[in-house]
Image 1 (cartoon, rainbow, N blue to C red):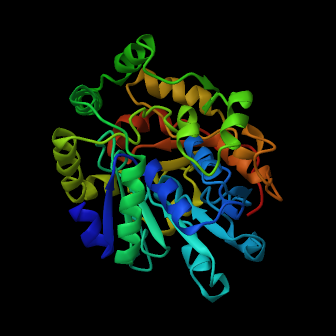
Image 2 (tube, rainbow, N blue to C red):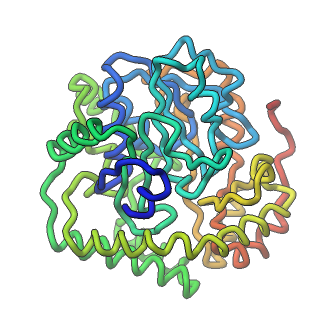
Length: 379
């Protein structure tokens, strides 16, 4: 946690996952029944964490420039809190949610994709009541999260709440977590992503999906909703691809997470070089060009035929993940207050192709031939 504590200047709580940190923050600062403004384009489990906290997810209009909340079109008077996404490391308009017009409301920052992103020289994760970081994204540790807060009394209360939710871990699962992460890094370094993907799918290590989303199982989800605000009933959805998301971690995992986190500053130059290289493509999302000094987690491209591009990238040993299609409006109708303008979110979710800047050179032979979408929403 040292790197995050020094970067944010905040009190930090160690967690087995980013997703547990988000739930803790929402339960700590928000009351059941309150309306939470959030992006309709984010990971499956985020929606279920909001529902588990007993909150009403309100879908925001989305900006086609960056895939984040379009703050200029939001009625902040109609919501009680905001959860930012900072998609792929591009920042939400946090200044709009931290100003005088937002007084008395709650801002929680999901900084999973944006560990290294600043706004006006100030790190993301320091604008809201809480910033929730992931150790599986920039550090690539496979698991782990950090909850950063300004007030020490909040830290003490959140620590107690965390301990109440933690489940027993095991040395075997810890060894598997570290070994899997190390194998993933080795496959990337050696260009063996394609055989690794085939093996993982053959062994059933990937959750069953409906497109890019986890199956809703409406009947069982309805039972879980009846128990909100409570997290355990939502485990079948929240634990997707990380079944130990609230399990205690032993010394081995903590050592590995610290080792991976310590490497993040050293990888900054390589990540920035990849961002700048990908920013030269005509398909790059416009907001990437706003500031090329941001070491993004992924560089979003907007392409006409994404499925074909993904298949070709995999053939060349490049894995594409972090696709959130369809938006929550279409994924879980009835569970959210719909966006007043869902078109831009649908367009973004259908066309975005996130590319790891650390492996830009490997991707460019495919990416240079891609064409942008034929149409573009306003914004």
